[in-house]
Length: 111
Length: 113
Image 1 (spheres, rainbow over the protein chains, first blue to last red):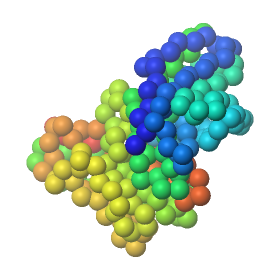
Image 2: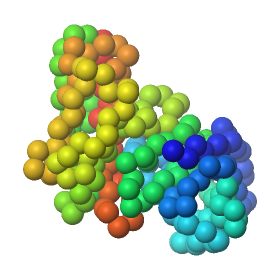
Image 3: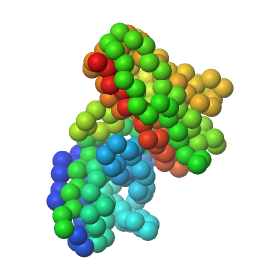
Image 4: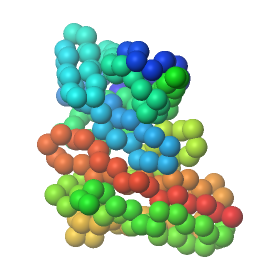
């Protein structure tokens, strides 16, 4: 199983861009990278998924370098409501019985 | 609402009692997961079903824990002889085969007194 490493916490201010990096040095060929967001007392929620290069949706971008040993979740112009824990998962989505979460990154957005 | 639903949302029990949680996944999803989450920690994987088959169980799932998914639809997670260390949020997620995206319920919070 590909192990992931993320910063434990990050602080930001409203309106700033936030980049959270995840290291996954032993990612396998078939593994995808998926990011989830979790608010207190709620289940995690899917943000974005990618395999290589760059993926963008309405809430975030995901940057994956050519060696795929890391990935960066980019949140543009964060607001107070983006305060949450962000998790990076790596796994084979076609055989995903290894969807394991790490400790995540606790993002605090300040006014 | 066609999301993942879990019942009950909250359960308070005394040590030694048995508890059962139910999860109703999104109907077209054939994969179902159970996780346990304690305060300040990420969700810990407990077990995984592909349709009705339980394909993987974590070592965290002691003999007191059992999960079923009859007919590949809803799932139950039973904890026998509860201990105070079982106090946690129990999360269920379902996933479609194509994307592997996990859709979580809002969880069932267990408090063992």
